[in-house]
Length: 114
View 1: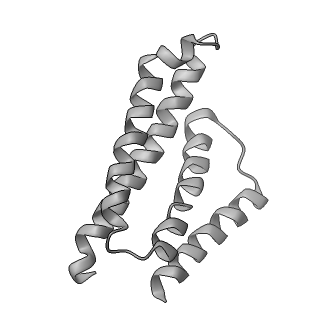
View 2 (view 1 turned 30 degrees about the vertical axis):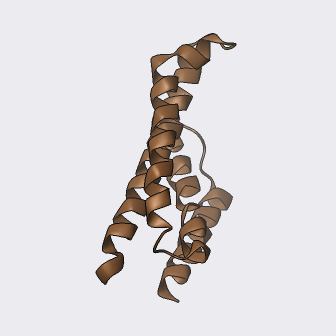
View 3 (view 1 turned 45 degrees about the vertical axis):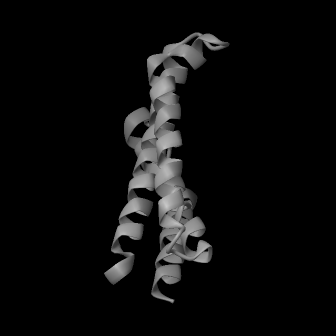
């Protein structure tokens, strides 16, 4: 990683915050009866805050990491959230989902090897 180490750390931090934000938003949505109440739930507010903070880390990352690498790397969150949803909410992950998750990881790894 060399001189890009800080940029990759910022990208990773942004990804973690964005995934955490998504999980918090789901928790907030489940805790409320829907409607406007879900927008004022503490978990929803925290989740949106995590998204906002993640954007700042992403901005730092793309100063040094090419967009053709940084932006597709965000796809890792699709895989992370799918696995987290399986464990947190018992959502189904079948063979097709596993294949899709594997393809995402392989694609991102290929981008970083090029």
